[in-house]
Image 1 (cartoon, rainbow, N blue to C red):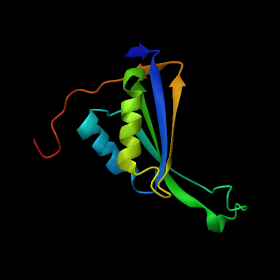
Image 2 (cartoon, rainbow, N blue to C red):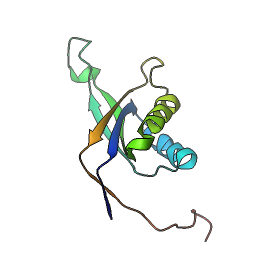
Image 3 (cartoon, one colour):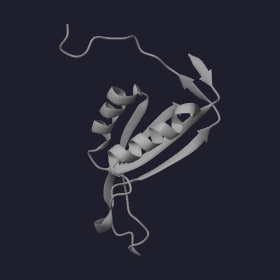
Length: 113
């Protein structure tokens, strides 16, 4: 395990069901495979209420990347997720004090055995 003190965390709030396909694109097109997806629900403050009827479910995608690639990956997620096109999500980037790089062995693709 490598300690990294030059990392960024990119967090995206995406329409429910779009996180998994985006993780696949990240791996295929950028080689990034350090993402985590979970589902959350919430409501915006612009409606003036936070009734349960107005809550929406979203996919929260977190990706840790080296600072040198952060803008590239941020722009990739922004474009592929359609953020900025209507109500298609929200994305932020922040600096991490420290992260740990984990690596998995290069395994055959599913069905290649």
